[in-house]
View (spheres, rainbow, N blue to C red):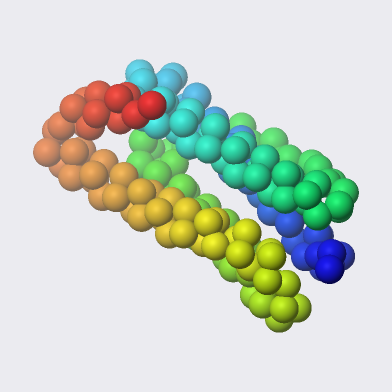
Length: 162
């Protein structure tokens, strides 16, 4: 049984969302790099790469299922951030959005009794829980570090991520 056209479209939309996430996180990395916070830049560079890997997993799944991959347009960003904290706040909102998109695919797969797609999505459901937790924790640590005047120490810690 092949996956439905509805599931195929939702996954293609998810591929676009994953690439948009990578683009957004690269924008954050550039912003922090330009502000001299290379650890934050490194953190978001790694995040951007992870999002590309997520897109590639969805692409591979569609190929495995004999479906066409349709890459949508990615919007231009060029946003100016009002503070060092703003990208961290945006990250939380964005991860919640991505979670909702994955849950929508999962719900459709469940509705259609598409057990293969449900099984495939379990990893993403768990990954999104981690992504949201990391985003919340980073914002909390930033707020603490900013208040404690230890932002540079946090930045060095983030730079160690590989």
